[in-house]
Length: 394
Image (tube, rainbow, N blue to C red; front, top):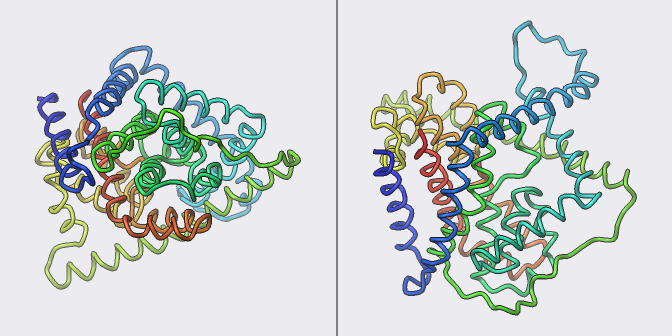
């Protein structure tokens, strides 16, 4: 039965992608097959072998340990706050550690560990699937650096890209999540699904791009040179990353206040008018998608509601809602929705991506704005594909 739902999920992704494809006659089936095979191998090793399961547990434990280290700084600054026993403050326990993780990312970037990993992982991915050096580099780097920072590494190339290549890198940016966010995600969903989703999303975005946005890559491409800034003093770089992490945490916190309040308002309004909450209503809309991904029918409405919540608001709001109901969901439903939620595919991210590109090239920013809805659809389909593959093992 799991294999049947793998097929229905794949058919859903391909069918919708085919309908909106810019060139149906030249869909890159070979690349898709190679990338999908990689996903199956990665997911099997991670979720279906003792070594993979132990490795994921180790990675999750490492991030939990990092959260504990981050608590030292948080407690020093906010330890004087009077909080009733047993209470958990989301801003302090989940968002503030982003500052510390961001600092670690900055250090690893400064000592050239991350650039080395990104460069050679991207090179290997390009050699295997032939997606193009720039696209392969960007798909890997966006899963580590996040946005808008990742766009700055290719700022010299962005003005030279055609619309097709621009779509692919933007789709990768929306489908991935930055390393600075991983520990915070693991506070709300099982760490193993966060890690697996990070790996699978890199490939899912490229697979969907092969359907929606097929094009040929040139063997000798002059657009692969990556911009490198002049090396700044270590503590200046560290301070910048710490400040960026704090700003990110504040931004996420502000968005959560606004979005959660908005959803609460809509739930109350819809319940008073039509006697059904807003989240239940959108759950009915997305429940067929959840079912085709492999979610049991009796749970498809709840999972569909979480999927829609993520699309309309952001992944943190949806993860918070999942955390509250996870105990009542089956292992399969939890696995699928947890993996699905680990991406930046939502309406708010469109503004971030468009603004980032526009700050580098106004003309290219206009192109991104023009295909923004197709971009959101592609990133959402990538999340559907990732969730479907994870569901195969539960």
